[in-house]
Image (tube, rainbow, N blue to C red):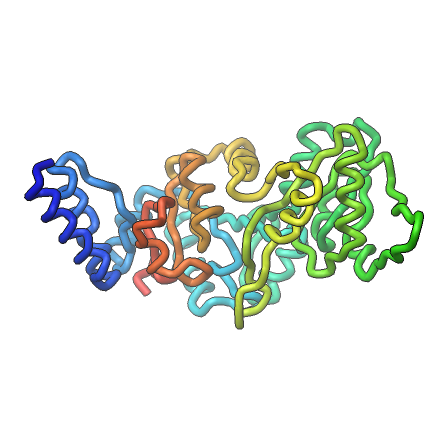
Length: 341
């Protein structure tokens, strides 16, 4: 690149990053072409779906849509406006819809009830949670044959899914409120037959649970450390963001020095399950979520098309920032854009 072109490119990039995001999005490909010195060196930026025409162009190449839930369908216990109409519209187009959530507080049965309570009609087979993913992973490796138990940090959802797989477990909500009396010579007793520790979101987490988990992982040979997800933040209410399961899993990693086996997004376990069970074609699946580091990575890394919605934790400014390296195929203000709303 010549010195003159280099200076011009620098000025162009500065002007680009000062521009409003709407202008920036439209000019992203044009600027990349100029910077690389030719029409063939076009950087692929995210296209915003903001009209019925652009929505049709996207959906014509899609058979199946996988939605994250928190920040996409609802915020806490409040449904996002227009979602029922959008889901009806997509089904009317013949699209198959699934809901995949990293929130392990509920089982699939529990999430079915939440959908019902919000007035959304779905079948139980359309919901996959990371609590199910944890149980499915243990079933896949035939954990039952070891005769060992699972210690759970988390809510009722993990235990309910483990029960369906015939896997012995304890902990979870049963250990909420447990305390440790630190005194000379005291050692916390733990079960040497624990073969796996599953860590999911747990708003009742305490020092007892952390100590019990680290003893199992550090002292029991071959004990697995499984995390349902590593989400930094989550939507417990519609008023603010709350610390997510990354805080719980991070506490256990900090005292064991081990990285967990992650079974929720962006792990391929859930998409592999759907593809194998229903014979889906990956390049005709659209993954829709509000998180770059889980939902969009899940889509991009597993051969799906990906769409970021701005109704959750990721603002447009962060998506279009030059520091962001995780790029979806498209993005929307909300999934209502799929019907031109």
